[in-house]
Amino acid sequence: MGMMGKLKDAQKKVEETKERLHSVLIDETSNDNKLKVTITANRTIKSIAIDDDLLQDKDMLEDYLILTINKAIERASTVHETEVAAVAKAGMPNIPGMDMLK
Image (cartoon, rainbow, N blue to C red):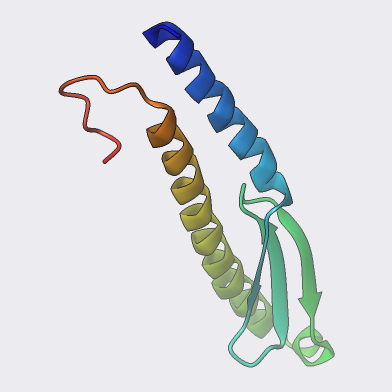
């Protein structure tokens, strides 16, 4: 297989990995377990579970949502970047001077 074929194969594998990451679920909870966010590795929120206590205080609920969703997005981004980089690196032909994925 020539270099262009290898590059196309690598691109296909990266796209397949991105598609697979839609089914990788990451759960993030607040420190006191009053809020739980489930997000995919592609950073799509799938569910949010809120303890009834938080429904009484709008400002507190907003703070919980911001903190917990941001933590979930950070974890999902790490998983996404790691998975895609690994597939891309494995599929890249050995081109001298192209060390960008190391």
